[in-house]
Image (tube, helix red, strand yellow):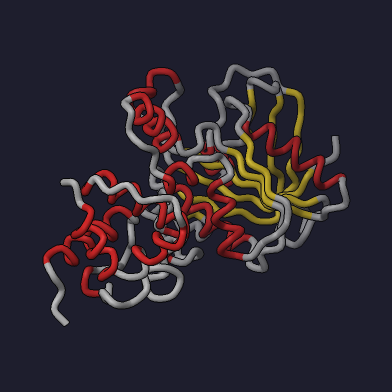
Length: 229
Length: 88
């Protein structure tokens, strides 16, 4: 399988220390300044982080964007369902922002990016799905694209049904060819019993805190290697 | 021009319901347009505001666009609507 190249990345999570890494934002509340306040008000914290990261990693707003999230905005979506059950009218704004592609939709409005965007939920296989989709786009004459992986804790009354998750988001620019400062991303078959991959795991991997990440569902593993200078 | 108690109440309702960041009641001029220019609200805000009026004052707006446009023109017209049609 052809290698991919990691050109650049950005991350957000309040659950890690940046330790001098400028690409990692660890503030409790991301600024969200990439989006005007009249649009920003409708984004949750993860959504604000995603838009800020996109502005940083794709300043020309001209990249394909793939966005994966296992649960999306579970808080809004599930609470709306309970509201419906109790006969309450739906909030139009909350309904509009509960869809899985809401965040990248807001980003496209704010940035003017009219390239393809894709929203993915894969029941725990989000990272593997992002890489598989990336390979497809890169094979289809695109030289690079941006992938985003974000999630937030599942609402408390559903927490027992899902692995514990943490607020985190990560954006990576992947390409077919190396560029200066890029790292090679290799993928190999790997039968593992690791916990489901979450955005925080990808941040740890990018920070060098773990050597590889692996997806038990797709039985694949990924490693990063520096390129000879 | 002095703001009436109802106008002030509506300002707070608009800020809270529409989650307007960095906007205070003083920033909303009762005679400035609420939508597009002026405060800069959009069509989703109009739906959200209609829902808030229904919940808080028991006002159900007719679907006819022109009358809604007049009611939502600015804070003063919104206050006039609430005053004349409130059920609670």
